[in-house]
Image 1 (tube, rainbow, N blue to C red):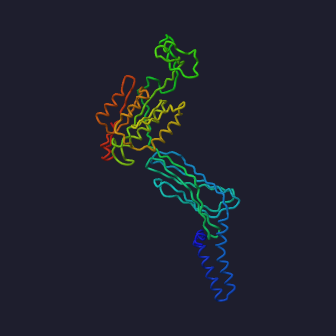
Image 2: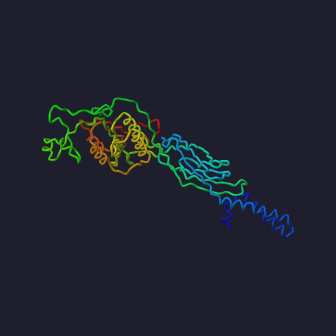
Image 3: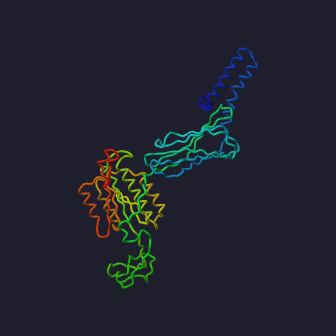
Length: 382
């Protein structure tokens, strides 16, 4: 009985109680007219409850994020669109959207009657000073009948996620090293044809034309080698991000780790925008490359992938940088290398120094992590 009457509002319960009381008094006093009033008052909320439970509203809700990805501290607008696809109008509706706690309190809206095939849109802002990937939804509705006697709760299962990225700062366009292999734009260069030794070769792959087999190189390397007609010529850069927990100081958004993430994101987007083939390597050896696995990413796609990865990254417990150094070497180790570093030991500094050779331009962005215990104005990077 209690479960059956759970949908009654305070007004509906008052009507039912008043009707029941009037009916009892009418029976005791022998008042037939009062009995009719009591029956009417009792029946009205019960009939409204039965009708509300049997009515099948076809409500469709969509959520739109503008934009779907923001930097920490920036605002995103969430737009909810509610459509009534049924043939019956709805009553008054209370709309409530569930959110991750870092995005703020749950927004609530009151919508008037939505006509059949009608639509309503409401919006609200969200903001987070902490990077990450945060949940929005599910949406819940509370519908009432025209008399305000019954309240029915409906919920949607759909959820969306807002990605909050590290802050990206615009960097000036300056001349960078590593442009010996190109000018930052993808170009092709013809293979020199002055002699057999100048022909660029690679290992034979299934499907290659056998007429392109270079026999002198095949004899030299002991495996089939074919001529390469042309070579891609593009500036390359590797960004090494030191994300070790032991190498950073501070907590939360004010930590040196967050500053390093912001620096890596700013460098990555700047270099990709200038046409560099970029690899981002972390202290754990994880690598994200603009070349991708199958043909490469567009600039916009890679920028999104990089920001998504940095948004959910966390400090690691890697003891040193040996794994990162090996990952950089496996990637070729030429062009431009930019290392965003926390506190280094002499051994770790020596490991990094061995990455530098004649074919690479190396730049170290070394954070003065001790200053993260000082006022913000004194924090520096060297």
